[in-house]
Length: 619
Image (tube, rainbow, N blue to C red; front, side):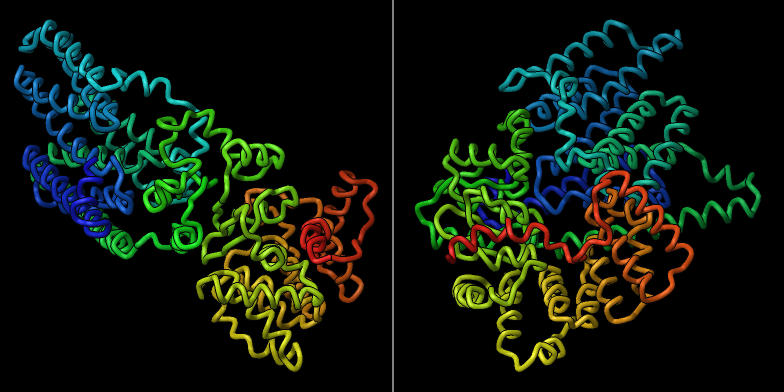
């Protein structure tokens, strides 16, 4: 509602900017009040504030409900400390008001976790300190009141019930994935978890058991789900500032040896400078990030101009909200980010294999069930729907990062397949590709992934000789891996092996066959050193770990065949001999009827099936 108000009043860009400014300003004001409450000295502020900003900025590139939840978190911790000092009716009433606002906004469970720590502390105080000025009656009455406030929302649905019934099936949604899975080996997160461990121990020593429990819960949640990183980071770093502010460093430094003082000051300064540098760099990244490459902007413009009648769109969850904003009401999306809210979890679970075209029959049924006229795929996910002969939609438009399929127009049947399966390219395709190139120049933007690819094929066809064409290609000017891979396979087919090696080598994100084709090109060029090194890399356990999968049977067969071919021309290293023997034995145990070496190491096995529909149309 807040976002809608700002965008409607000030416009899209200005509204988004203003709401971010408002959220950050209120957040910093709340942090200032919190620092003032804990009487934090400037070195503690200098150390902790940059990390608070890092976690705030981590999810600030999109305006989300959590943007204002972060302010509530700081206020909740402030009220925790106020009520911890004085467990009065007044301070508890403030907590009740905050929770009332929170249960009608977003994720109030965060407040319940924080205030559970407060009530735990006071329960321990009542049990262990006879002189404490707190009665069980006040503790119980306010505890019940604050709990019951959780029901005071339009759905009359308590956040604790939602949290306890949180579906584990949501883990397959990217933002609910574990942090180490979403961003493995992040030094920032490992540092955060290490500091969290220290803080929990320190709070227990300081007898702040409630805060220790709160930090334990949020530290665990930050590890379990990437979505909780910002919330957890803000909680833990603010509590760290509170814990450090309770230490009398002046007295400590008087008693500590000079070497210890030097180490502590140096460590603190290094950590503070690292935080400042990281937060400034992250702020610049967020400011420069327009999200332009993340969303199908040119496809949206194309649909508005060429299909004003609208239609139902099969889309990825991530782009759902963007498409809704720009294309409704004429176009309707299949799904957006409101999983387990507007879209039941069973629907979300069904969407994943359907969108991925893992079951062509189910996909076709879904197209009919919802009368889907369009499907939008990121380029890296468009390979399977384009290749599927039973796919009811055809390629109508290709942008820089997305492919649009529709039931209305089949504009690029051949070139889209060549883009995804360049090993299937044939010189006999050139006449049809020339016609599609003319259509691409008319319909597609200059930065479309398809246009430069088709331009190169046209230039190759028109050149005096392939060698002159390959010599003229500026590899550094090739922006798309699809373009580079296509040139690599074409150069291999035309026996320009040195050029093929260079094209495959320039690919930014290489797959296993990219390395195998590099090895093949090097072997044809009698570059045995590079060929053998590449084959050893592909067949190593390290390569399997990097790609999070073992080599397929086809990849193993090609690797063995290239080793064999090289062995007939050049002696192998002992390591290569051992690797070859081991791979051959394992593969033949798995497929006893397989004949090695394979006749053609270029992966053309499915070309006939993939291009069958195009061939039939031409005939």
